[in-house]
Length: 123
Figure: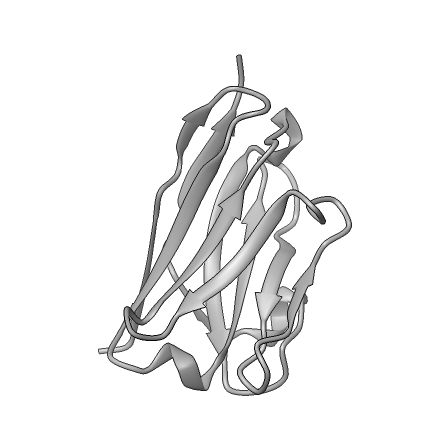
C-alpha cells in the first residue's frame, strides 16, 4: 500500500525551529519528485518546497527561502523539511506529496498526499 506519513509538527515560538519528516512506504521515494505544501485556515494550499528526482534540485517559495531546507534520505525512504526562523505566518498544516513527473510547487501537480502535520508558531 502506497503511503506517506508526515510527522514532526507541533507548537514552537517565533524564531524557533522544527524538522518535519515525510516517511514513505509501499514505494521508493528516490524515484519521485517530492513536495512540501501547507494550508493555513481559510487559505488555499500552497507550495513550500520541492526536490527533483533527476538531480536533487531544490525549489522554495519566496516566503520560506533561506529559512527552510528540503532534503531526502533515500536509505530511510524519507524526505525532511528543516524549518528555521519560524514566523507566526508559517502556522499551517503541512503536507508532503509525490509525483512521477516534473517537480513543481503547484499542488495540482501531485496526485499522492500524506495526511498532514500541524505546525503552530506562537508565543
